[in-house]
Each structure stands twice: as structure tokens, then as C-alpha cells.
Image (cartoon, rainbow, N blue to C red):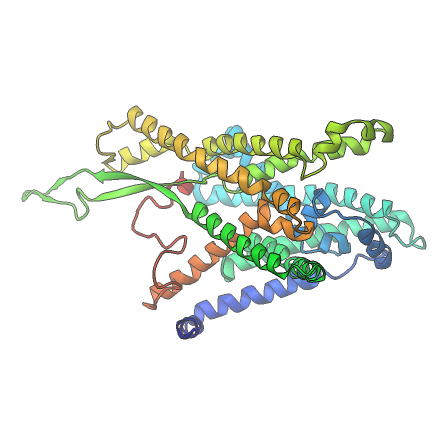
Length: 458
């Protein structure tokens, strides 16, 4: 406890770090405040009645609502939150793999190319928000939550603009955190939305176990959740180091070598290089059956046992297909992100080599083989962590709390917290203070390798 208090004092004593943390907290408070401001013309009582009538924790609406911290179900001006920006970013990123123009902006035009991509992403975000906003207002209309005294044309026109403005505001707040705060702004906004639903879900689970006189079971649930978080942290931070060596160079008449000549270094290949993207893609495909059921007739939807199973997150069919999709997408997305040929060319430019491996094509093949091998446990882990909420619900955990036992929510929480702690620790270490932990490493603290960020640079 004494060390913890000392660490807080060290953090507060660094003026720049203190200002960044305060800026981040203020922006997050503003963002959360906006999630409670209801759109004009919406009847909150009707929304509450509809939300209380059914459990939508595990469908598309429940997922979006968890990412927005309840703003989606509240019909607030930040109902869509930062999600249209995430969608646009994913589209631009995929175009960078397939379209030469976007690929050139990402890899060859440097800072100017990144600025152009950011501008294109912002414009695409507005377009996506207008489309999603129209669908969202249709959803609100089907719930009977629109004031009949307001003309529909005025309601739709004004609220689409408001929803677009809310998304642009969320995007701007995220950029303010990234530029003047601590951590990645967009990721922190999503994280705060996820955390906002945690207290109510935890309280509901505790109350349910208390009524059933099963407090020991609740304690076991907390212990299991702790173990899952620890395992997730281990996998997120795990890297496979490929040892490399820099060739010696004679410089000058005396034959003196470069300061780092002959030094050993390593290429860090992440065990889970694809992050949460395979889960996001798999979830998008798994939502298609529910969409098909909405357009199908009631008799056809009720008679198809397979479609019904695919809309039940706890069914065997759902989890088997979900696991296989994540496994396949992990390999596909890793292949898009990790380019062994680029690693080989980078090593050649740096006059470096992998001991025992010839430069050029053999080096690229060697890195490709290692990447394929370490992707296997990463893909298995992502698939397992994605279906853990189903197992938690099967063992009696309420659905609103079971989503924290795995899936996208847990991975985002772990990754964002580790990234934020790594930035705070870097400030402490630069001022010659002790880090956040006395032993071990926070993600991002591994500063010994010149190739630590190679995966992002190429």
C-alpha cells in the first residue's frame, strides 16, 4: 500500500503527466454526460418499458449498447457513439490491403499520407453515421417511442443531424485524448462505455446469488473471472523473439567498428497479432441469421431449428461456427498484417541477419513459418475466449454479467488498460521514478529492441 501511494505521488509530481490525466478524465466525463441527453421528440418512458420487456444483452443491439455505455438504449445524442468511426477505420484499413491508392497512402507517403487517410476516414464516418442514424431512428419508431405531436419529417431530419453531430463530437473527444491526454482516445471511449455497464451487471449477479443463498458461488465466479483476466493479459503480451545480429562494419583507416556492430537484437512477433479484429468480423457474420429471421415470415422463422440455434449464443451450433470463423479470420488477418517479405527487406537495409538463416527469400520463409506456428495458439485462444460467455451463462451467470467473462469486451478492456498503463510507466521511467510494478513488465515497457514497433512501421 505504501508503494502504491508513493507511485501516485510520483505521477502527480510530473506536471505534464498530471495535466494529461486530468484532461483525459474531463473528456471522459463529458462523453458520459452526453450519453444521458435524450434526443428531442423521444419518449424515455416508452423506451424504458420496451427495454424492460426483453433481454437483448446478447444480440447486436446489446453489443452496441455495451460499447456505448447504455447510450444506444437511452436514445441519447451519443447513441451511435464512436462505432461509425470504428466501422470507417476498418473499411479504410481493409482497402489499404486491396486498393493500391490506399496502400500507397499507408506505407509510402508518410505523415502526409496518414493525414489524407484520416481525412477520408472522417468523411466516411459522417456518411456511415447518416446511414446508421436512419436505421436507428427506424428502430426507435418501431418501439413506439416517438412523440406523435412532432411531424415525422422534422423528427427524422433534425435527429439524423444530431446523431451525426454526436458521432463527430465523440470522434473529436477521442482525438483530444490521443493528442493531449493519456492513452488512445477512441479505445478509451469504448472502454468507458463497457465499464459503465459493469457495476449494474455485477450488482444484479450479486443480488441473484444472494437471493439463492449462493454467495460461495459468487466468490468462485469472481475468482474465475480473475484467472481469465490474468490469462488474457499473458496472451495479449506474449511475443516470440527472433534473434537477429547486426553485421560488423569497418570504419576508417584504423578499422574501428560501429558502436552497435555485431550486437544482437530481436524481432518481436506477437502471439496475437490480429487483436480483436477476428472476433469483430466473426460477430458481423453471426448477426446475419438474426437479420434473415427478421425479414423471413414468422412461420418460416419459427420452423427453422437451425436459424433458431444460430440466434442462441449458448447453443452448440452457434459456438462451433463462431469458433471456426474466429480461427479462420485470425490466420487471414495475421497474414494481412505480418508481411515476412517486408521484414526480410528491412533487415537487409539495416545490414542485419538471422543467425543460421540466409538473407532474402530464406529469411522471409523462416519468419513466415514461425508466424504460422505461433498464430495457432493465438487463434485457439481467441476462439476460446469468444465462446467463454456462453459457458458462463450455461453455468448460471446472468447474461448481462457473462459478457465480461470473455469476448470482445474483455479483450478491449485488457488491451486498453495495458496500453494506458504502459504510457504512464514510460513517463515515470523517463523521470527516473520506479515503474508501476516492481518486477515484471507492463506491455510497452520492453524498450530494448530497435525492432519493437516494426510490425506497425511496415
